[in-house]
Image (cartoon, rainbow, N blue to C red):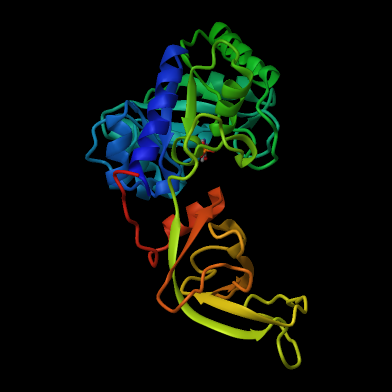
Amino acid sequence: MNLKLIKENVNKVVELCEYLDIKIAAVTKLICGNPQIVEVLVESGIEMLSDARIENIKKYKHINIPKMMIRLPMRSQVDQVVEFCNVSLVSDLEMMRLLSESALKRHTIHDVIVMIDMGDLREGIFYEDNIHTTINRARDLSGIRIIGIGTNLSCYGGVMPTQEVLENLVALKETLNNNYGLDMKIVSGGNSGTLSLLMNEGKLPKGINQLRLGASLFMGIGLNDEPIEGLNHNAFRLVCEVIEVKKKPSVPVGKIGLDAFGNKPVFEDKGDIVRCICGIGKQDVSPSNLIPIDKDIVILGGSSDHLILDVTQSKTDYQIGDDMVFELTYGGCLSLMTSDYVQKRLLYAE
Ligand SMILES: *Cc1c(COP(=O)(O)O)cnc(C)c1O
């Protein structure tokens, strides 16, 4: 993980958002809440930290800035959420009641942002469904303060953040404030996909004043995992070790059953090839999420602990013990960061 590249991304995005009066909640799930990286975020001007998992947020509980839970809280974790977070994203009256009770027990007030599902079909009150009843009833809960509404897009259903969808969200906040005498200030307009909209089209509807950003800060990617221009895209790399190099057939020998994952494998016969095995496997990352730096290598597949490559066309003569280097997709990075078997090394320069 190259912290210099991450820092440059954060500096750029912070500057842009500051200029537009948009607050950033940095999302730390991609780095599993790694406190050393979180320190770098805070040094670079990040003023709020957030994560989908309370376990990650607890890792940086000593860093004294506001924290937000961005996955709907689990009933079994309500007390922890209130203890370690200042804000939660919520979509359910019952959950707001539980948070309120827990906050009152701790003699605090817990802030909530009510999630609206604008069509992506992940979390949130489905647009216009029963938003009014929920907000109206939630006003009576004295342990919570409703500080805004928000949405998440381009995650499950792939619904794109557009000016129109986000304008509707801003308008809804105004309506709710007027109808229920609320003073909600925040409209949380989405993830790095929404930052793409801002950076590509040069604007977001006025009134969107919070973005929850992970992929863009760490990997420089946004909507559809496409690179955002002006950001660094290579802060994360996987280095793994070659454990076997041998010339063997390209098609298995014998009667073919199922592989270790229950699939029937298919093979293309290219005659004998130079096959290279690396000491990493599907328990750590799916081979389809790795991009070899050596463009002459083809990823053939893997098993739980082995990654198998065709290095026949490579100009490098790989030997046991050599490093094999890969760039990563978002999904690849996420699962590698989660694997305890992968050492995490921080670089402070290029
Ligand atoms: C993961 C997540 C984000 C951050 O998404 P990125 O694409 O990494 O910017 C924002 N909001 C919610 C609710 C999330 O779960």
